[in-house]
Image 1 (cartoon, rainbow, N blue to C red):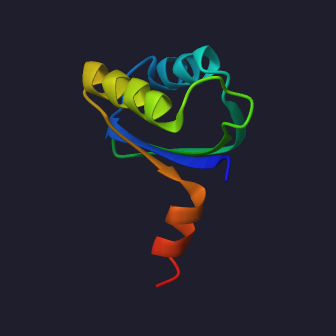
Image 2: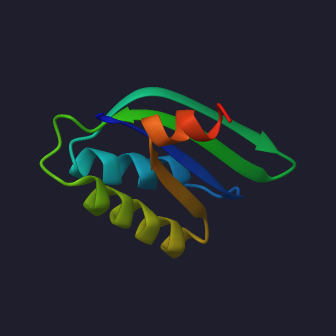
Image 3: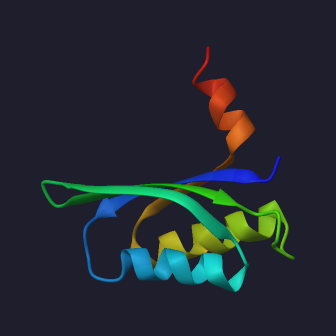
Length: 90
């Protein structure tokens, strides 16, 4: 499968969306759906992305996003959609 789920959470600050989207663009990942919210200063974003056109592996994309999260003081999780779906169907 070529779809992934990205979850971002942490204290809200300027540039979170830009940083995540820049990593995705660098790896030629297409954003298919995005939801974000702010809860009492806490930023949460969910993204459904497609990696079929990317020249990067799933691991390379995941590592780049994880490193970005660490730099920004955020938690970023990246999962294959099929695994995400199976975890939530139990």
